[in-house]
Length: 173
View 1 (cartoon, helix red, strand yellow):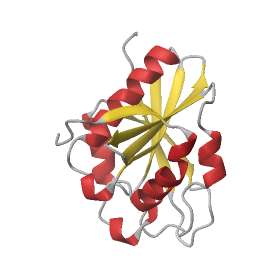
View 2 (cartoon, one colour):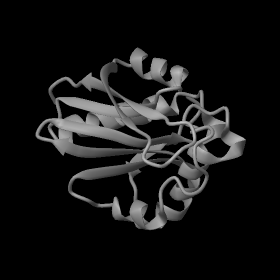
View 3 (cartoon, one colour):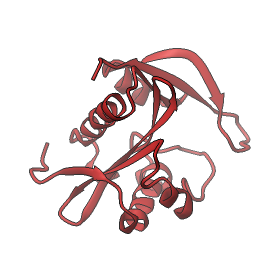
């Protein structure tokens, strides 16, 4: 990894504008069309609104993290407690120009550790668009397995899309 001064820390309210821009760029920007997280031909517009993102900061059932170096936010992850021993990872994003430098791996490991230590989770799930084969393989190489479950993309599309649900067992904290 090229980031000697990388810090992964909880997001704060002062991060929200820059973080929203990063997430938008990673998931929806035409310039990021080849990125791992890009949602392709799905609806344009905001991936997550400013108020929704701000509302995730400091919650008791969610932990929003940012990866920073200097003053720049490079990536993010969200861990949400969903059940007694179950958490979900979302908003895992890396600036498109920095993908392929193991920053996503670091964010993923930190999110898994937070789920196990802070939320006492024994399993963690995440959702991946069904047509993102390369991304699904990425998670499978990191111990995630397909559950056989899926859910439809939450907005109307001309060609329906589904999220596949992947799961990983976490070691005891």
